[in-house]
Length: 279
Ligand SMILES: CC(C)(COP(=O)(O)OP(=O)(O)OC[C@H]1O[C@@H](n2cnc3c(N)ncnc32)[C@H](O[C@H]2O[C@H](COP(=O)(O)OP(=O)(O)OP(=O)(O)O)[C@@H](O)[C@H]2O)[C@@H]1O)[C@@H](O)C(=O)NCCC(=O)NCCS
Ligand SMILES: Nc1ncnc2[nH]cnc12
Image 1 (cartoon, rainbow, N blue to C red):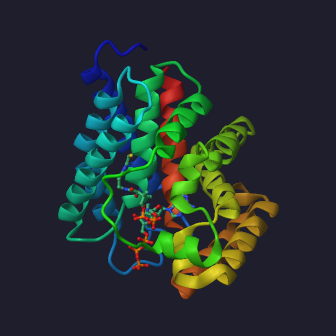
Image 2 (image 1 turned 30 degrees about the horizontal axis):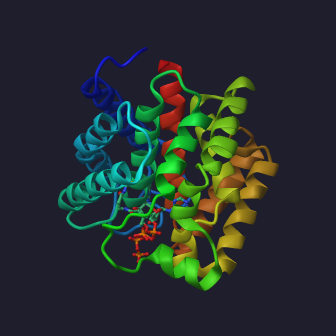
């Protein structure tokens, strides 16, 4: 598949990104997260809202793809994309009545869309993630001065958060999510189980600032160890693993924590996976 124009590239990548977000929301059961069965640890979100939020981002994702098509990563492109990203955040907030459903996903998918548009079709996920990382390393001089849950977690605990993940070329996507997704498929797991397995592998490794913000480092460790235990028991496709997954879900809901960053990186994994199948 070869994109013949910036517009075609934007339409294609916008479609893939929205589809990846909807696949992520529909994946069930996800610990602490909104899925088709429950809102997890959230009181203000549900699956319909997440899907509407994903749809509201289509034009911003398309614009990121068409803008980055055939370009080099540079300061000017980085800041143009940031401006499109902020417009996407406004569409999301308008659609959700002010609820932050997909801020981290706009960041991760926006950069990966741009990386894919820079590389052109047919490029390996690692190269796309590297191009996205190169873009993320340019400073965003247009960013409003503000604080956030991620910045507070970075300052208090020294974790790298969503910024570090992007600047390092999305290691939890290309070195964790994608290989686990593909290995799980190769071992004949169902698609649902393979995707859950990828999510669990990301959760077991990521310093998710959504969890840290609500529960501190102690809770992050509990979640990472609980997730690792599910994987050791065979993960989503074994009976013992499934039971442990249900226990983990209950525990996260009781603790009122949600691995939102891991969900975003699963969506990023599904995006790169879909893109590589198309190429
Ligand atoms: C550079 C930005 C990342 C700026 O981000 P900011 O500092 O404002 O935000 P952060 O808090 O640092 O993180 C952003 C979101 O990234 C997700 N995330 C968390 N940990 C990780 C991780 N280790 N790796 C990757 N991604 C991670 C997470 O998103 C999900 O959670 C959101 C809800 O979380 P939160 O806001 O903490 O929770 P609330 O319920 O809203 O708050 P409380 O009620 O608990 O108080 C949800 O959106 C999920 O998606 C983090 O929230 C970048 O965002 C930026 O500059 N954006 C503008 C420009 C732009 O879009 N550019 C794109 C292309 S250049
Ligand atoms: N399924 C989900 N539930 C809660 N927060 C999220 N952020 C991204 N996806 C999410």
